[in-house]
Picture 1 (cartoon, rainbow, N blue to C red):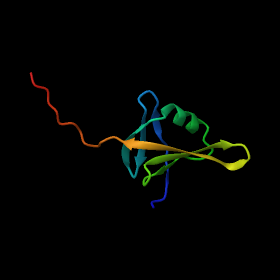
Picture 2 (cartoon, rainbow, N blue to C red):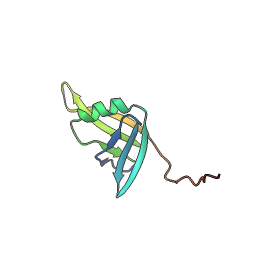
Picture 3 (tube, helix red, strand yellow):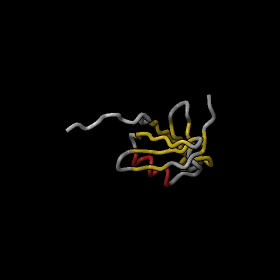
Picture 4 (spheres, rainbow, N blue to C red):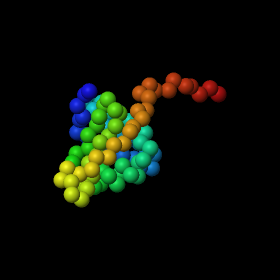
Amino acid sequence: MAPSIPVLPLLDVHRSVLELRIHGTWLRFHVAEAEALAADLANAVASPRWNPDARALVVRIPKAGCATGQTRIFSLSEFSRTLPNATLVG
C-alpha cells in the first residue's frame, strides 16, 4: 500500500470538482459530497491527505475527547485525461 500524501486541494463546490497537484501533475476528480467536503476542509485539524490506492481524500475534523480528531474519507472519481477529438462540420 502506498503512503498517503499531504495535499492542498482546490475545490469547486458548484461543479463538484476537486483538483490535486500530485508529483507535478494536476489531477481532476468528481466528488459526490462537495458541500460536506468544503465544510470539513474549513474545519480540518491537519493537512488533508491523498490516498492513491483508495482514490480517496482523508480529512481530519475536530471531535470532542479525541486529540487527533475524527477521520472523514471522501471517495473521488478521476476524470479522463484524454482530450476529446471531435470536430465540428458545417
